[in-house]
Structure formats: structure tokens, C-alpha cells
Amino acid sequence: MKHIKGTIALAAIALAAAAHAQTRSKEPVEDYVHEPMPPGFQVVVAELEGPVFADASGKTMYTWPLNAVRNGDLGERKNEPTCDDTHYKVNTGLQSPYPGGLELPEVATRPSCIDYWPPVYAPTDAKPVGSFTVVKRKDGKTQWAYEGYALYTSHLDQQPGDVRGGTKWWRKGGDGRETGVLRVPAGPPPAVPPQFDVNQIASGRLLVTAANDRSIYVYDKDTATKSNCDAACLREWAPVLAPENVKPQGEWAIIQNSPGVKQWTFRGKPVYTHILDSIPHSREGSDVPGWHNVFTQVAPPAPKGWTVHGNREGDVLADEQGRTVYIYRCNDDAADQLACDHPTMPQVYRLSVCGKGDPALCNKTFPYVIAAKDAKSDTRIWSVMDIDPKTGRKAAPGAPGSLHVWAYRDRPVYTCARDKKAGDIECDSWGELFGLRNGFKAFWVRDDFGGYHG
Image (tube, rainbow, N blue to C red; front, side, top):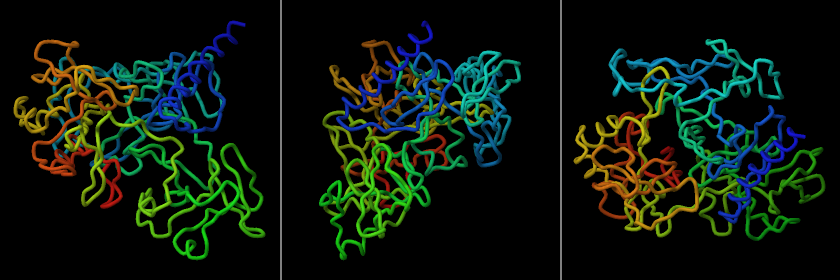
């Protein structure tokens, strides 16, 4: 009975998180494949990442898959967890353009990998459950793994639905050689037919084809039972055909356009690809009146009053004054690849690229986006925090000299002093490796005009 009550309580947490996301956005949340899980594990629907696995307290679980970097490989192989209590003191030289053996910043207080990434330990008698297996750590302890990769939580996540430790955004379009080996939130597969996949972008969970990452679209003139894309329309739009023996599933149904020709529908709309799309996960088709990209789940809206502006390469997010918003990204070059982009982490990396180590110059070049004193956010992905501008660290609310600023994924956002008009992106790719490893990237709402921007 105690186990049943605990299971009911955990299910209630997950359902509450999903209900919060649905109520907040007034949009449906992504359905997923229900897999068997170890006792206490659950699925929580996160605002940006969609369904993710979480432990009994609701903390998101992450993996760290092996990936190539500039001069080697970092991350973990299947069944071989390496994140431990080692306090690394020097860089590897594998990710950075600088040679290995250089002393890391704030080495005396640098945490270990498991300080930032607590392992999801398994009981010594734990048995595999579906895709969840048990792996042995070097310290002799047992740890849960998903599809062979060891599972961890993040010290940054505080509530169920927080996904602050890592992200699926940037991963598909990025490359470990540029971005470093990022931690990735683990989650169940989306409940889509095998012909489809879901791609994480800034705007949400974009539906694409599994074979070639082509965006999926719907047409305003269609109904749930009929495609109204005529012969002229079909020269530009290709219906996504369903195999002969396939059956409807969940939010997916099938219509018959002509004898023996079946087309998939999603949430009551026939789905298509755009023949003229030029790059993967394109938004080009949505420029045609009456046609729209399809999202299994949309991302939360930006703060009230913020706007989107176009330029030669895409659409960028701007604050209330129309100034382009920038995200700071940083992944250090130690063997455990700890992130360095959060205000609780060393600020020397950020200060080096935005102000030559001088906080005053940094604050002038990349000013924080100031939030009103009464500013609030009803989403997890956007928030407000107090920052000490002299150190870049979090400050107590209302502390003398602190700034009240907007944050994305619990990280402050910035504008650029070089931008002079709405849509300017003079500071995009500012920093090491085009701003991917240590630097600033414009907040790209749409990036398919001139290629991938991260």
C-alpha cells in the first residue's frame, strides 16, 4: 500500500507539471512513448525540452554522451561513467585552442564533477527495467543508466520541470567540436510514427521527418478529414503519405485522398513537407500565407513587451526597447567539461571576452537586460534575478548596488552596445569559436535565412 501511495503521489507531480505547462501556454504538450521505469522514476513535461525523465523528487536526469571536440573526445562511453569526485586543476587542451596543462580559474574552490552532477545511484540489488540498466562506477557504487549512458541530476535544478543543467536546443545543429560536450536531458521518445521525429529549436518542439529532418506543415484550408491542396498546390507541397498497413495512434490519424493513397494527419490536420525548403528544420514554408510549421509543444513566450525583429539572416528576440537580446554560452576545457555560463560559476571566462577582464568595460559592452522591480514571469524558462555587476555573481534580492535583471534558463541575458537599431546583430558570435565555446550569441527566434546560428 505504501508503494502504491508513493506511485500515485509521483504521478500527481508529473500530471501537475504537465497541467501547468498546458495551462500556461494554452497549447497542448508533447505526448511520449510510455516506457517501463525503475521505482520512483517519473516523466515531467518541461517547458522547452518537452517530456524528460526525473527522479523521485522531480529533478531532471541527464546523460553525457561521448562526442568529438577539436582535438579529441570527451564525455562518457556507454556503461562507463567517468564523472567522479576528482578536482581538476588544469585544462585538457582538447576543446580550447590553447595547449593543455594551463591552470583553471579559481582552482582552489573548483568543484568536482559530482558536485555539479550528482549521480543517480541505484540500489545494489537493482535490476534492469526496459531501457534503464545498472552500471558500475569506479568507486564501486551502482548507478542507473538510460540506453547505456549513466544518469545524473544537476545542482542547478530546484523544482520539477527545471532543465537548467543542459539542453536539447543547439545539440542537433551544433557540433561538439565547437560547443563542447554538453549534458543532455534524458527523456522518452516522442509518440510519433516512425516516419517522424521532433527537433528542439528556440520556438519549441518542431515536428520533422525522421529520414531527412524536413519540416512538417499544415494548411489552413484543410479539415480533419480532407486535404484541400489542389493540383497547383501539390507542385509546392508534398503530402506525407502513410504506409498501407499503418494504423492511427494517439494524436495521429489517417485520411484517404484517393483509392490506396493515405495521408497522415496530426491533431486534426493533414501534414505536408514543403518541396522548396532549402535546409533542415526550415521555417521557409511558413512564409506562405495559410501554411504553418507544426510543433508538438511550443516554447513559453518571452517577457511581456519584448518583440521580434528580422534582419538579413533571420529573426532575433529584442527587449522592450527593441535591442537584440544575447545569450552567453561557456563550456570549460577541463576533463569534466563543467559549464561556465551560470552566475554561480567563475566569471573570468565571460569577463575575458566581453571586457578584457574588466567588469566595468564588460557591463558597458554587454549590458544586462534590466527588469522592472515588479517584473514577474509565470514560466520557468524566463525569470528575474539580482546580480552584483562588479562580480557577475548572484546577489541577495535588493542588495545595495545590485541589478535586477532578466534571465533565460536561470542565466542573465544581455544587449550589445554596438547594436544601433532593431534587428542589429553586431555582437553575434562574439568570443571563442564564434561565440560557441565561450561567448555571446544573439537569441535567434528563427535562424533559417542564413544557416545555423545555435
